[in-house]
Image (cartoon, rainbow, N blue to C red; front, side, top):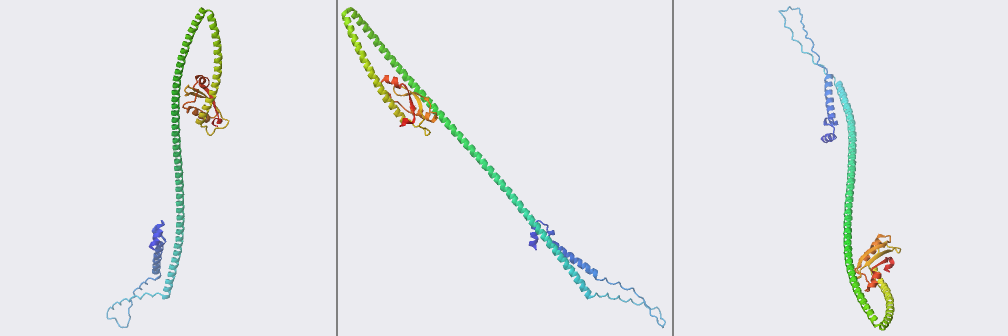
Amino acid sequence: MTERIREISSTGVPAWKSPVALSVFLHALIITLALISWDWMVPDNEPAPSNISARLVTDQPAPGPEPEPEPEPPPPPPQPDPDEERKKQEDAERKRQEAERQEAEKAKARQAEEEKQRQQQKREEQAQKAEAAERERQREAQQAKEQAAEAAREKAEAEAKALAQKKAREEEARREAERKAAEEERRRQEEAARREQERLEQERLEQERREQARREAEEKRREAERRLQEQGLEALAQETREDRQAAERRRAEQAAAEARQAEMLSEREKFQALIRQKLSRAWYPPGSATEEMAATLQITLLPTGELVTVKLVNSSGNSAFDNSTLSAVRSMDRFPVPDSRDTFERYFRQFTIEFNPELRN
């Protein structure tokens, strides 16, 4: 019963409202009522009859006053009927049993109602727990979603930062490369200008030597003319000889010029072929290059074969293709050029070349 009371108490119902406590209370109440009804059924002691005073009358004269008679004891109370008493007890027992049965049924009904309430409360608690679990699951899901979003945002920020840093490094590297290229170009231009200055100085000195030789020849010619004028016929003969010699020199010079022209054409073709061969080895066209692409470059050289400048005069329409041709020209330390100054000045001081996929064949 203790466990039952504990079980009922654990459901949240006060102990004094539990079915067992109510049952005990009703049993005590029934027994009390039965005892009270028993007292009512048992008749009270009948009241003692009034004292009867009697006097014996006889023919004899009383010698004196007679003593008063002692009162008689009251009669005993009537004894109850055993059958009637048994019936009353049986009726009381039946009433008690009926009351107990009704009380048991009520207690059972109360227990069923309490069980129903407990089940309802249990279902409500389970529903509340399920609802709380669902809320917790949704909260955890929302938290996981927010954490995933935060992680994705942090990852995107990190990737964007890394990309920005990479672009900054690439931009810095590009600027550094451009700076170095500009510095190299400036150095080359300065070197080319210096060499050009030296060439001009050498040409000036050569011009001065030629001018000095011309002046000396002019002096000699004038001296010869003077002598011819002095000599008369001998001078005329000498002039005739000189005319013949001049005509022969002119014919020889013409023949030499023609031979030199042929030699220059041969050297031009030879060195152009060498330049194309070296450029084809240094050129690495991009993977996007097609057979239809072509770029034309203008190249300026020093007599030593060193590069002065290179510029794009006709683009292929593809920047990667154009940059690859410029890189190939700039990678050449020295271009093959002829030793003849005239041939160099005429054909290799400044020339154009076309880059196309056939150049590598």
